[in-house]
Length: 190
Image (cartoon, rainbow, N blue to C red; front, side, top):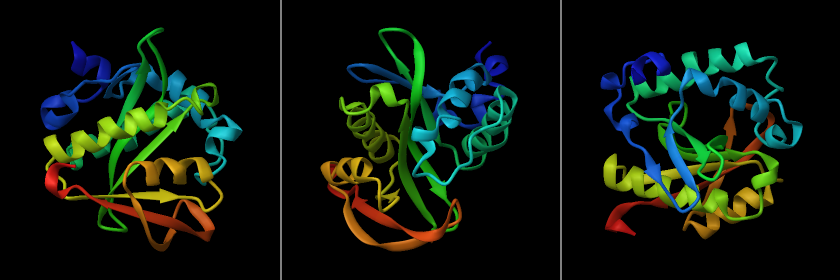
């Protein structure tokens, strides 16, 4: 049963039953089986360079993040990040999607992928799908993106997706530095 594999009853988070298919990706709720992939991504120095995380210590630590953070978002807010599965191989190569940021009282579009998938439009492809999900399924009116000021690649994706720089903000994950907050209206179905 999917709920057993997930470790979460998706009836508590019906939006996360959604599986989004793009040209190259399947975007679905994380499961506990994704812990090795999350560990590989979250312990890779280049992947976490701009996000303020310390390298993840183990697959068990990744399992705890899935259980205590991702599943918590799904259950409490009703949505959260999707695991991104590369259709050609079935491997989880990253994540993308929206997450409610309580400190900012706003919903963020975020994405993170293994380096071998950088520079070929995967972040843009997943962002387009995530924006449509946020607008059409969740009915959100606005999204933000939090970008480390040195992360030019992520800033380019934000601009390409119609986000505009709004202001600098302090964000708990990134110490001693304000991050760039980009924002985009979802009104009007664009």
